[in-house]
Structure formats: C-alpha cells, structure tokens
Image (cartoon, rainbow over all chains, first blue to last red; front, side):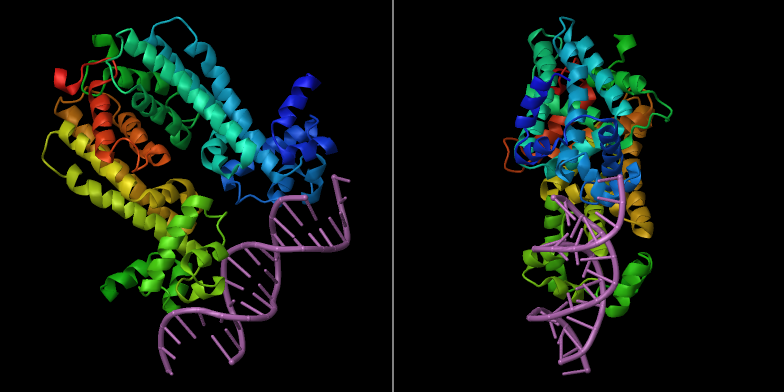
Amino acid sequence: MDPGREAVAIASLGEAVERAGSKGALRPSRRRDDVLRAARRVFSQKGYHGASMRDLGEAVGLRRGSLYAHIASKAELLFEVIDAGADEFLRALAPIAASPRPAAERLRQAFRAHAEVVAGHSEAATVFFHEWRFLAGEARALILAKRDRYEALWRSIVEDGMAAGEFRPGDARLVTIWLLSAANWLYQWFRPDGPLSAAAVADAFADLALSGLAGRGPGEA
Amino acid sequence: MDPGREAVAIASLGEAVERAGSKGALRPSRRRDDVLRAARRVFSQKGYHGASMRDLGEAVGLRRGSLYAHIASKAELLFEVIDAGADEFLRALAPIAASPRPAAERLRQAFRAHAEVVAGHSEAATVFFHEWRFLAGEARALILAKRDRYEALWRSIVEDGMAAGEFRPGDARLVTIWLLSAANWLYQWFRPDGPLSAAAVADAFADLALSGLAGRGPGEA
DNA sequence: CCTACCGATCGGTAGG
DNA sequence: CCTACCGATCGGTAGG
C-alpha cells in the first residue's frame, strides 16, 4: 500500500485509469474488492461483452450506476482481473525458474505451480485466456508483456535442460509452447472437486512430457 | 441438399431454427454463405457478444436489417459457425481413428489432421473454443456431443496403443487430454504464414508426445 | 449510494 | 407473384 508505488502503477495504465485516479476510484476499499470479485466471477461466466454493469451490480448488491463510485470503467475492471491473474502465475513460477535444481525437477515444479494457480484461481484464469484480447492500448501491452515473461521463464527451464544434456536438443521455443499447451489448457477442464488433485495432474503431465507416451515411466528408468 | 435430411437437421435445432425454417431462412443461398463467412470472421475477432449485427452487415455489404432475410437470429449464426467447425475436425479424424494402422502412426496422423484443420479454419476454431458456451439448449448439447465424440476418437487411439503395448499403460482419459491440449492450443498461436508448416508442427508434437523431452528422438530409436 | 438521465447502440422487425 | 433489399423504427440496454 505504498502510495508512491501505486502512483506509478496508475500512471502506467493510461487515460482511463488516470481519470479513475483523479476521482479516487482506484483507492482500495472493501467495496472495491467486492466489485473486483464480482467482476472475476461474472466475466468468467458470461464473458466481458456478455456481462453488463447491471450483472455486476446485482452480483455485488448495488445499482448499476453506483459501481462507478468504486471503479472508473468496465475496461478497468477487466484489466485488474486479468492483471491480478497474471501476477499469480508469475509469482508462483519465478522462484522455480531461478532455482539451481536440475531442469527436469524444475519442470515438474513448474507444472505443479501452474496447476495450483489454475485450481485456486480458475475464474481469473478463464478471464485471462478468453478476454485479454478485449484490452486496449497500454493495458493490453502490459498484459502481453507479462504473458511473454511467463513463457520466457518456462523457456529458460527448457533451454537449461537442453544445455545440460537433460533434455534432447530441439527448438526450445516450440518445445516450450508444447509444454505450456498442456498447462494452459487445464483451465478448460480441471475441476478442484474432480477425481485428481492439481498436484496429481501436474505430476502426470510432467512424467508424460519427460518420458513420452512410448517411453518408460519415471519409476522404470 | 436432400430436403428430407435438411428437415431432420432443422428439427434438431429447436425453436429458433424452426422459426427460421418456416420463414425459409435456412434455405441455402450464396448470400447466406456470405453471411456465414462474415459471422465466422467477425465472431472470431470480436467475440459473439462483442460483435453486433451491424458489424456483420458491414462485413457482408448489407444493412443490419437485411441480414434477417437470410438468417433467423444471431444465435443461429453462432451455432452454424461452430457446428461447421466441429464437422471439419470430426471429418478429418474419423478415418484415422478407424484405420488398422499402429497407434503411434495414427497418433501422428491425428496431430497432422488436427493441425491442418486449425491452419485452414482458424476462425471457426477460435469461435468454437471461445464462444460455444454462449450456445443455449439443444444447440449447445449438440456441439458438446460432437466435442465428446472427437475426444473419444483420440482416446480410442490411446487405448489401442496401450492395449497393443505400443504405449505405456496409464489413465487413457488423462493421457488423451494431455495430447489434445497441445492440439487444441494451436488455435491460440499457430499462423499459416509463420516459420513452421502445420505438418511440421504436428510431426514435432507427435515426436515429443511419443518419445518425451528426456527420451530419444524418433531417428535415434 | 440512489434516481434520473445523456448519446449511442443493442438485436430484431415493421411496411413497402 | 418472387427475391433481395431499403429506410425507419420497435422496446430495451449500453457505458457513463
């Protein structure tokens, strides 16, 4: 809650949020958190354009117009939901990518971290993947930069593994997309109340990615 | 264009399309194809709820109201775009899944078929994955049934491979989701004008899926 | 936080 | 009579 850092964050969001700043809409509050939570849920269910401000108002118990005492715009809500989701993924992966452990072990940890974020923040993950393209200007650029940073963290694990001879050589970028596909797709089907835990799915995916469908399992090496 | 088959198809779509049938809106025409093509493009770019009938009209060179001489509703357009996309995927995979070839070979063919459908029908694929949840009633059930059939075709290859000892034993359902994740995610990043062809990406994914990141490549077996 | 509005636009339909 | 389309407008709702 350092006001200096917050001012920097506000300045980076461009015109819409600056207007909000001048109105004080960005000031944190319990009500504001309620609105963000409602946005996460309603956007994930109906999509950004399919969700109306009335929907959000009903979800939080306010009239449509009253929401604007807490936020600057519908677009600002979309950015905040997506940005918070992106931060969850980055925060979970950063220490794993920077660790000195073998690449295969870090790959397993990366799958676990990713699966646990999806399991714990499925609404934000859905909004991230489905609605980021409706962001405009700086908000969009900021989110795409975080997405690229996240992919670069995964790629660094792949490149380390190839350099160390742990992984067979190949197109690190393509291999990274291949690995991330399985991780990213989780938001489409994984349910915390399903038969498998996030960690179990992550471990299964890591085993498959490392050993392959026609290879030996990790216990048979 | 057998009118009997068309009547069955109409009946299966529920009330909205039956209304269309009674007005003749479902009768094929060049103009109707133009509208469907425009819907595919505009829905893929703006999303279903973000695209207005005015957008569709502009894309096809008609006023908004004139579209209703050719279609019954915006919802009907969404269904038809998604259904045609689903049929492309099913039509490409069905003969591969039914083939008597080894499972590993069929898996490679499945990746190729899927990647080529994504490459050739990227707009329909995007609309399929992002907008199917905005379908209602029977239209939604029909699409989910096709999605399940497609997944079952992939799973049959996995099960055959495990039964034949080509693939190591495991949870066929989870392995299928893992394989399909890489295939499905293609619509997010694959571009036909990129450095790799759809077939090249498919082959790389098949090699990785079969041999794994830490295993030997197909030429080193 | 509300009611009461704005300029505009929504999906869909009217008569001709 | 048909098709393919027009300009205008329906009742409601959008973000603000």
